Figure 1 (cartoon, rainbow, N blue to C red):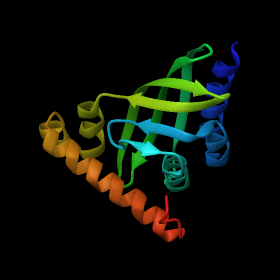
Figure 2 (cartoon, rainbow, N blue to C red; figure 1 turned 135 degrees about the vertical axis):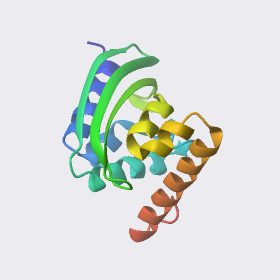
Figure 3 (cartoon, rainbow, N blue to C red; figure 1 turned 90 degrees about the vertical axis):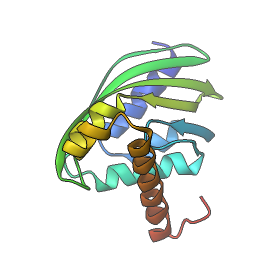
Length: 160
């Protein structure tokens, strides 16, 4: 197994344990992360997002597979089961991840998933009806950004 594949495996193994510090240790200080909800996070913002998700998760279960990586890039598939706190609805999200590496760390991390499928589960009828729309996606993104900003303020980390 290439050392970068092992790095990705370590990232998800830490996630399974809700070990956000272990996850952050896999990231380059200048990492850039993006997914369908959290867009364009850089450096400490990306690590703080994982910290927030790990700390708030009451019933999070993570599985991962199909990890492949070489010296410059890699990918993996992972799935998450959890209760979406805003609605109390159960979610099973299926995510494909792409990575780029620099200096033995993850420098770019892009997660992709079906937003409509996620919204249908997390938001119920509203998500099923509007999950395809840019309006709902932007609303969810705005709320996620506010939530992360509040999380950082609570910890006195407004500089991130």
